[in-house]
Image (cartoon, rainbow, N blue to C red; front, side):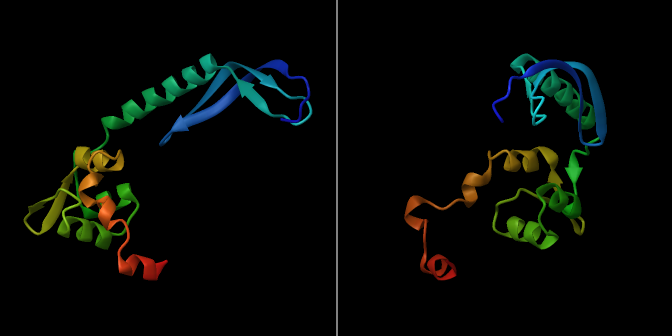
Length: 136
């Protein structure tokens, strides 16, 4: 902030979640007339977050429960080969159906949220091995 006195205004906020976009009119804010920086109260920010969460829940109905390799790779933002490597070394739960691997969305989301990654983590004694220091 530049240190100027803030002026109370009513603003419009453009926000959204995923493919949904929303403009929220009537949000109370403080604006710096010099630099244009805006401050919002905790109450206003909470209201905006709750609206965005509501949009996220709408999206839940459209999400498939069972994912293929490409969908899983997209969700984790890694390559398909990384997914195959994660299956092979046990970091990712998967079921083979015919020729294809399938993944439960809840397992992938659990991995993203940090609930399942401990199996792949090293112990303190294994923190650095010779190969790691050569890479560094």
